[in-house]
Length: 108
Image 1 (cartoon, rainbow, N blue to C red):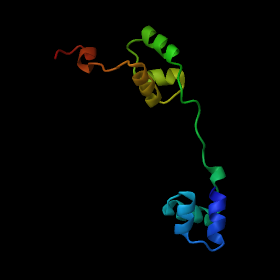
Image 2 (cartoon, rainbow, N blue to C red; image 1 turned 180 degrees about the horizontal axis):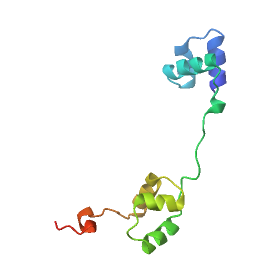
Image 3 (cartoon, rainbow, N blue to C red; image 1 turned 45 degrees about the horizontal axis):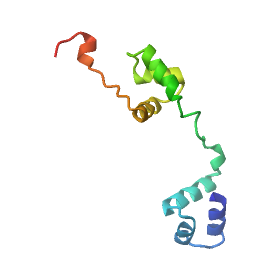
Image 4 (cartoon, one colour; image 1 turned 135 degrees about the vertical axis):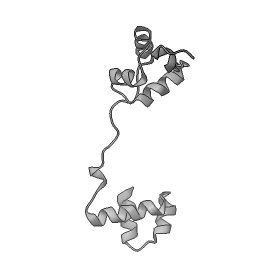
């Protein structure tokens, strides 16, 4: 799509027309033009990272085994981002709020 949009612009079409045709914002088209002039292509950009899903049953088992584990520890265990664990827990209906004062042995 990027190549087709840039070809239309280079053939004389206005950026606003190409923007409406492809449903791409004008600023995006300007950025693509700048990158093309610099010799940058979209091929050098990183794509999606690894798996963003976590097996809910495995997560449930890990929480039972280590009920004091923090999100970041669970994320390291499964090799995903902590937000992935948070979203999975939300889907599962499990809340992970903890009282930090009680963990430190303080009184409320």
